[in-house]
Length: 117
Image (cartoon, rainbow, N blue to C red; front, top):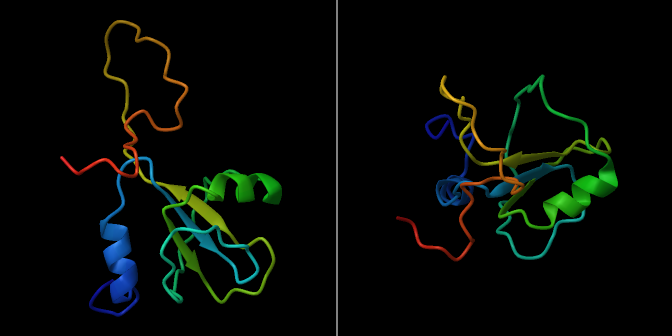
């Protein structure tokens, strides 16, 4: 993607800084952008994700308030937004039953101010 120019320098740098549990909001031109995250001007995203869950617009606004990166596209259609959560999907190893999953959205999430280790 870097060689074809799809990701600009600021977007590539912001993506490189993301860690487990960080949120990335890719939104249309009408989505109110929360204060705080860096905002690259625009990017071209042409991906299709068939297994995404639909989230009501009001709930998406709540969830996106903590986004570490926001990418506002030039899309004019309403509700053309997606919130991505960084992380790794693990499959449970065969063996004895495991304890219930933690209630945190991402058990490996690091606080935004935590250093990389």
